[in-house]
Amino acid sequence: MRILLAIVMLAVASSVNAEPSYSDTYGTLVDTHGNISLPGDLQRRWEFLGTWSIAGKELSTVAALHNVYIQPDAVTQYRKTGQFPDGTVIVKELIKTATSAMTTGT
Image 1 (cartoon, rainbow, N blue to C red):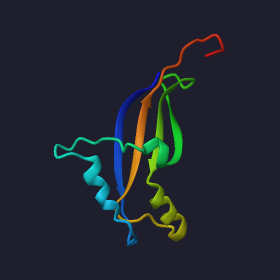
Image 2 (cartoon, helix red, strand yellow; image 1 turned 90 degrees about the horizontal axis):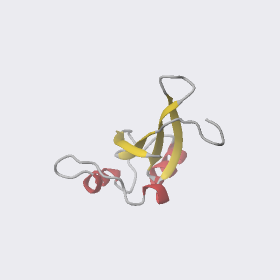
Image 3 (spheres, rainbow, N blue to C red; image 1 turned 60 degrees about the vertical axis):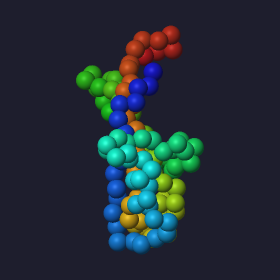
C-alpha cells in the first residue's frame, strides 16, 4: 500500500542561461497560498532519476521509498553542459511502506 506523504520541490541553481525558462514552472505548481501540486505529466513525461529506500526501526524493514523526478529538458541540458539550467525543478515523492508476512515471504 502506498501513501503519499509529501512532495518536496527544490530549485537547482546554476550559471547556465538556457531556453526555455524553467522558472515559469513555479507558477503552475504552487498556488498563492504556497500549496504545491504535482505536475499532471510527472510519471509519464518527467525523467525518473531513481528510488531510494529508507530503513525502518528494525534494519530488516523498509519504512519509506523516495522517488525522484526532474524535468526532461533540464536533463538534456545537464547532459550537454554538466550544469542544470536556472529554475530547474526536482520532485521528490515520499511513500510510506509497511513490511509484513505474506505467502511469498516477508
